[in-house]
Image 1 (cartoon, helix red, strand yellow):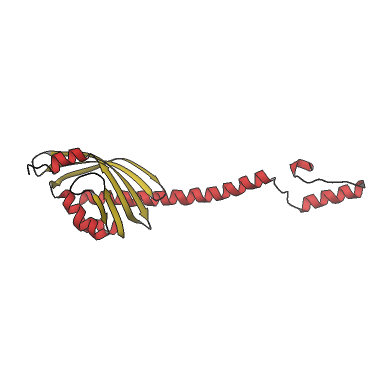
Image 2: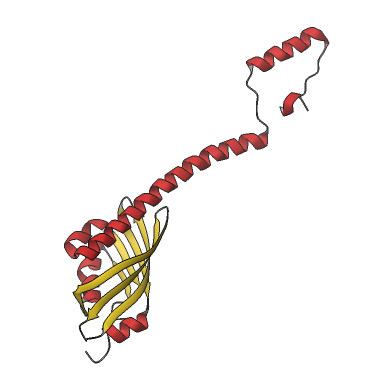
Length: 190
């Protein structure tokens, strides 16, 4: 092993050779060992990747937060700008509104009106209880409260997995208590 862990082997023949070797070392930057080089490259790439991911995470979080703020303060005329034209919204379960809604227009003009038709939207309150974001994915937990048209109180706990690309929501996968929704909003009595 050469001097200072450089991995270089030096064969020294006389004082001139020693001085010559020292001079070459001063003029040539020291090479890190393979492990160090890989760590440095990984660290540099990792830092750039971490920064890009952090920026994307914050952008995605901001889009979903702005969407929720708009949904709380109004309805359709403010929501169109948040969805990509080919966005999808999937509501899991066996409700009349369950399924995959494809396209911004279908989400806003078919799914949402059908989903909110059985509640008094003037009483609707959304409260975000948690938001976790990583890159283009945002997991949002929220509660929804409203008076149902049948006289019952809708008090729902929801989770939505949002995917955001280029500043627009491209997909939502929503999970909620479908039994509560069925009882309060879609019972056979109304």
